[in-house]
Length: 199
Image 1 (cartoon, helix red, strand yellow):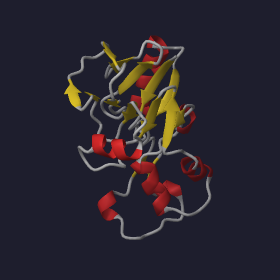
Image 2 (cartoon, helix red, strand yellow):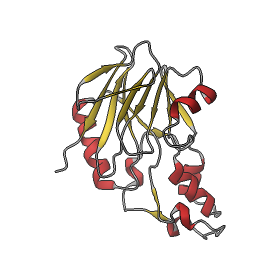
Image 3 (tube, helix red, strand yellow):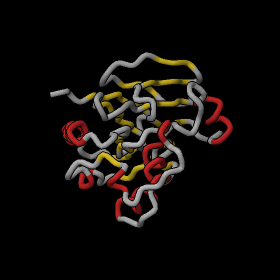
Image 4 (cartoon, one colour):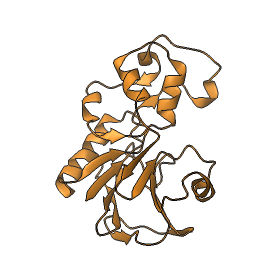
């Protein structure tokens, strides 16, 4: 089965549309799955002081029409966590964010956002918290990376890399600004790092 994995959209409608168009061209049969940070929270982490806002709209970058593009299953990221932390009122968008799971499965792979572990400590955190997960896809750092058995492997766009056998951690990159995503073939056990053109 083919999976198109994308995340760190941060409310960038234009970048998301470009990635979705490339997925439709390259892998129309693929199941789309999100790795979190669908929306951008407009209140930064350093500005959290216990304050609450009456509505989600006060703390979210929310371009018209972006909600309709989120037709795929996704996990939550740190942006969704912050939006929920800052608001109380029941709204449809808040309910949507609150229902996002921490992890999802794509056949034998696990999707998780990546803000759960300290910087550069994915291997240790995953070994402790998800020890059975041989293949993990994540986002969060906005940087496409491929780590196999603890070793960082250089990537080339649109080239197949094997994920068979060894423990593999794949950062799918960011939709916002970079327009990056990953195509995972669970039968062939390969991934391809993809990047939609900037215009």
